[in-house]
Image (tube, rainbow, N blue to C red; front, side, top):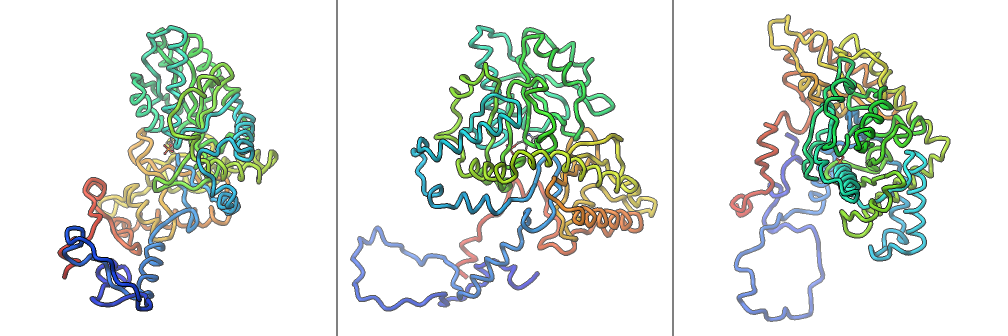
Length: 468
Ligand SMILES: *Cc1c(COP(=O)(O)O)cnc(C)c1O
């Protein structure tokens, strides 16, 4: 452990200060004893330079798109243009009160965003209230439910969700009070139309899908699926969290979807991760616009600062360049897939869209007599080389899933560097899987017990230790 990896309380030395103040000439007011603290406040006592080093080192223990390549499949970690931040920080925007939402400039941002997203997606209108992707799903399903209720159709209590769906889909459906019916994928990783047919009936509210699906594959039967769902009286919901591959290529509205959400914090470059503010605007077809505006899931009108950043990104690219995003995201993903399929198992051999899934190593090193290296081991070893790990063990269709999404914003040189390191790791695994089992070797911490770390985190330094 490096000296400055210590906690700030461990750096503390009694009586040390990080500041100097001139002596006061005002007497302290007399406060009633009951209001006064009986023991000293436990604060670290450190010099200024120790404080600076402490926080600078802490900031460097983090990993984000601003520090390295982050190929997290199904999460679209694309770069965050700094122009977005400059615009969001302008005092004319940053200083607004939420109740000033009717100022002409604010309205222009919402209206411009509504028009842009409608043009990109083929929807008629967006509501900006939802503050995350899952929040958008819930909003979209509430719109769907309200649509059926307004028609006096009370029997539609079920929603169809493919087995490859993002976990938030069934969760949002459950929160909305809908019963989830799963539809299976076929051997090609697509929704199995024959398995879908028997599920249809007067109790179906609709289907939740994403296209390309969570395996990064384009659902080529989407037109037929749409006509089957509409034919039984249901609506189609599109999960557009990661819409990069479609930008400027095809539009969910044209595929037959009625309701959708977008993650501005994925597809449209605003920062995300760590639970930071997100935005999951929901778009609908014209007949649903009035219902969409009547569903209220947050105070005010969503996360204005996030919407503003995404609008800056869209305007910066312009119509012509937005169209490049989809093909570039697709090209990057296929380039990595083809370059690494000698070393990693590729269960679905097709042209992918923005992401794809490997199913573990071709040679996991178990022929050495040692336990073979797993997907988790590969992910941990990547950290040693300064790359964030891809999404692992999702989707659940494969046991050793390793889901890679490079996004359209990475250079070929970065993709090549990642491919080289993945090959190096595969060679290490084949020769001596223990190198991977012990990884990460260079990170601030090794392998925490992930269940304990999530369920039982120790987040404070105990008083006894402070006192000593
Ligand atoms: C990220 C993601 C979501 C959920 O978005 P949050 O903002 O994390 O709630 C939903 N669907 C898909 C496909 C996603 O990738």
